[in-house]
Length: 210
Image (cartoon, rainbow, N blue to C red; front, top):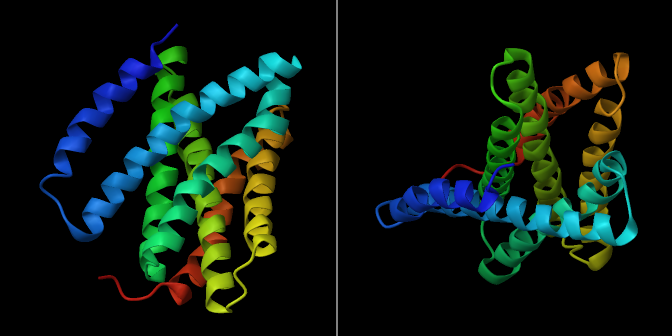
């Protein structure tokens, strides 16, 4: 048993203090990173409560429930930032990536403390597969939000469409890695392969950094 709240506080406190001394893009990244960590913790509470309420197994939660809860939770602060502050496209991507990195970092810390870090293959999988998956899911959301804003078709349908893509990618990864053998290998490769595919359109959409 681990105490996730204690781990959360241990990581958050120095990062929160650093906000007093950074500005610009660095400040947005650190703040978004902290938000991503908080979403991870709250998402775990919500998924745990719902899994007990509907009597789901751990595998069913990871495939059917967690992608919905976690991707909605990650979308909400990004939507708030987009509609209240109306940032440039590069700032949207920066915050989306930082939220994904913060979520993945806290989740990986908790899992490694639970299972141990003795196995190098396990830790590599956590970083290269699970960690990258959360970053890619946020990139998908950011791409969707930026594109619908650029084409001036911001609507509930467009937002739900971007969210659905993110949820589908997350659920597909969880489904693939839930089965041993070739299915797991494909699942582990999927996040890095998708990140590679997204790199070129990201470079084309990204405005010069400020």
